[in-house]
Length: 132
Image 1: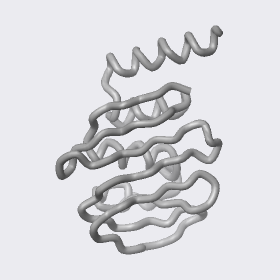
Image 2: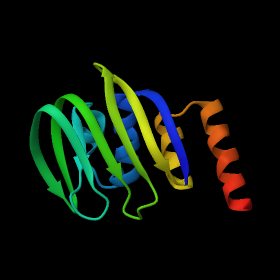
Image 3: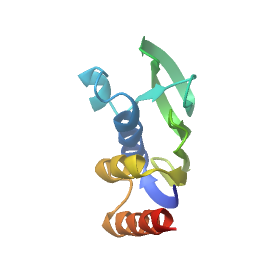
């Protein structure tokens, strides 16, 4: 696992959580709506802290919520190998901090949370960790 502490926008982090949990079965309209987030209370917990939040629908073990004025998101993978928190710093901007696995690194890169130099740094640190 590798530690991260990066600035990113809310939409990128939302895309990361969707990619990591439910992209294959979430309704297309939910994937496209920037106010809809997945939550999970069993296995790896996912929690959205928001000023206004309404439960929409439960599919499998994911509860989809419509959230406005998001203050933070806690994401823990089912495997326990990734634990990341996003905290708002200004409206739709924030910081993602925590420990990530190689699989989560791919999802963070795909969703735009990490840029190319950050991805390369994480890959180098993962390689060093595996060689020790």
